[in-house]
Image 1 (cartoon, rainbow, N blue to C red):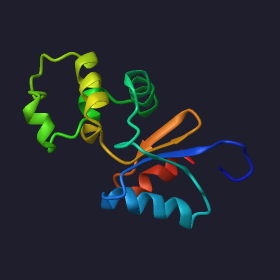
Image 2 (cartoon, rainbow, N blue to C red):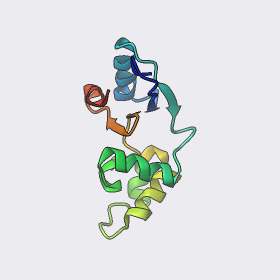
Image 3 (cartoon, rainbow, N blue to C red):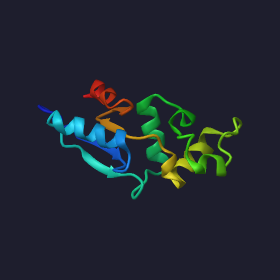
Length: 121
């Protein structure tokens, strides 16, 4: 929750990721207790990904992790792939989603660096 409001903060979290752990710790140090979504276990569907992209102001290509094995295996470097195909790939293979993503109301930020999420709180 954000102090003085009933707005919920949510983090799409991967506990194995150092940036994700650091972002969660930063939020908690500031007195926030975000709802934690372990997105590798409970991945967002295509509709939720579209909503996240809108709130982040990014395209699917900007949110996709290019260093993951699935990126090459699925041929996602092909520049002709549509936004819908990239979103479908992230929904089916959530390791492709850049992390961590923090939501606060209608705003979202990627915790790279972790301090970037403070701008939306």
